[in-house]
Amino acid sequence: MTDPTEPSATPDFLNHDRPPVPHLTVPRGVQPFHLARKPVRGRLVRLGPLADALLTRHDNPPAVTALLGQALALTAGLAAALKFQGSFSLQAKGDGAVPMLLADCTDAGGLRGYARADGDKLPDGENPDAKALLGGGYLAFTCDQGPDMDRYQGIVAIEGSTLAEMTGHYFATSEQLGSRVWLAAARTPAGWRATALILERIAGEGGIAPELDAAAQDDAWETALALATTVTEAELLDDGLSPDRLLYRLFHAEGLALGKPRPLSYGCRCSRARLASVLSGFGTDDLDHMAEDGTITMTCEFCNVAFHFERAEVQAAD
Image (cartoon, rainbow, N blue to C red; front, side):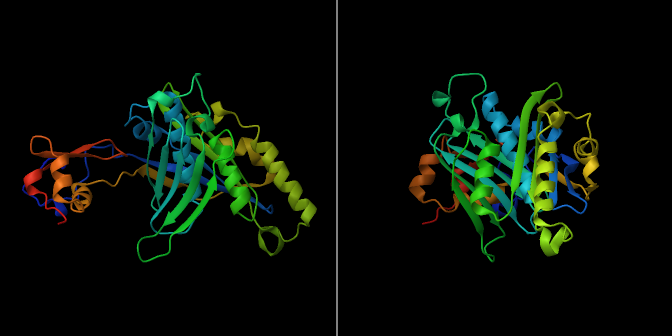
């Protein structure tokens, strides 16, 4: 088998082979659930070994890697609540040590992400929070279903100390009903792990719990939040504690009902064809400037794989 990162006899625009990256799927990456006859639903996201495969593609400081892990788990959980064909992404742009944070999940569960870090701006301390890393800026959630469909995007200023608090600010300003997020990512003896627990309050009147009056619905929501708050980071990241067991521990007295789990997979979508298309948009001078010893090297920001193109074979836009 030829290496898809190197020039070959196959024209670049036809070469869609996957680069040498992990072929990894977590069958129960997202576990949906709801509380019977209560206006509460949620998702528990466990990336398992997929987190380590995604996060170790780049040699970032541990605090930056943990922030990206949280973003990946959060994005997977939010995407699982939507009905769409395409990709759902979280993007944070700030003026801090991490000026760019991006996580992206397809409707099929393909997950990818990267964080751009400026080592000179990294704050002092062992575990700086998300605000210290991102600085001032904005958080954007985008659902992109391709050029033939309208793109939905919600943007809010970065507010809060943690990524969970920033997401809560987005929910508070952009959504009609309550939501709460718990996030965790850390290096464990088994490698990097990342997880998200998402609770959402859904309409009761005329919906899932029409028999409950407003006060009872408020009480059910507050009870669910109080129970979820008891979860520990160690429990969230424990491979030995299955999603259904963890959710049972939290919500068994509240009528826990599990939905069908959804898989998550290593989802970088780079290929020679994609990058060749990008190169074709540059002019002659730009391409000449990119070339070193007759070769243009393009590195995928997500999987950190370098693709090499012979300058003589790349046609300029002009």
